[in-house]
Amino acid sequence: MTKAELIEEVHKGYGKDLTKKQVAEIVDGVFFTMSEYFVKARVTKGHTPKLTYPGFGTFKKKKRMARKGRNPKTGGIMTIPSSLSLTFAPGQELKRRMNK
Image 1 (cartoon, rainbow, N blue to C red):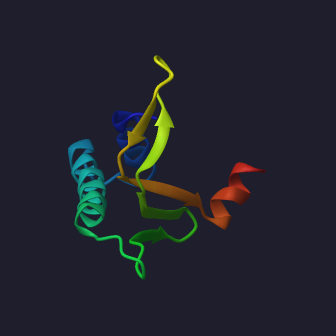
Image 2: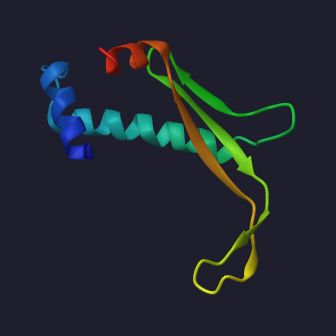
């Protein structure tokens, strides 16, 4: 699903009193707020930043440690640097609806 398709679906289902531009601004605002939270949140030993939306699922920010890897082109050993990523775990309601 593309951004335009998402906006169209939200507008058809829930935004009857709103224009598509207003729906787009709301969708953009939600995703911008989510991304800002994960950009600013710090991963520590005792705290994993997460965003939970009941019925949909949970996004978690994780830190991947540096590790050894193999260059597939040359076969040589290389170090893969540490990085931050997001994981998603679907909620029970979403799992149930997908497996109907």
